[in-house]
Image 1 (cartoon, rainbow, N blue to C red):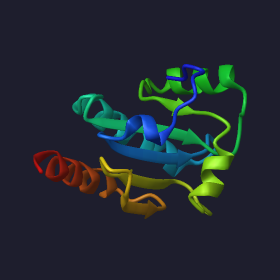
Image 2 (image 1 turned 135 degrees about the vertical axis):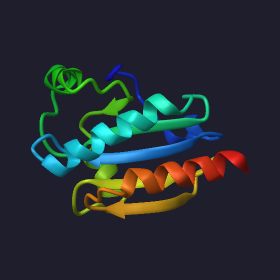
Image 3 (image 1 turned 120 degrees about the vertical axis):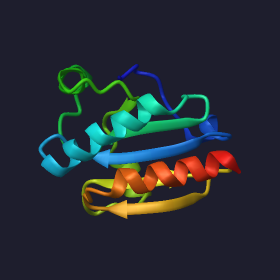
Image 4 (image 1 turned 180 degrees about the vertical axis):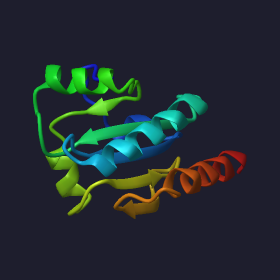
Length: 130
């Protein structure tokens, strides 16, 4: 879902945040995105926020919105995310960051792994119990 609003990490403090950096032409990115959608549906948005960040292609909001809609992706997504990619020094896709409630990066992953979402799910469950 692309709302057109600006999203800042400062606004998300107090929540666990997952940033998933991807681009449309990346097949592993799409696999990871679909798996993260399941986590988005599992966790309450007031505790866990999963944000997809489109980094390379299709800076046009309407094309990206259609791409996400066709894949039933409802988690918040950011377009024109190349500045976020540079800020986090990402050089490959997909890239994933888990940020704790205080705003500290507690987990990173570069590249696709079939077990990644399971690992992130376990980390989220652990952090939510603390």
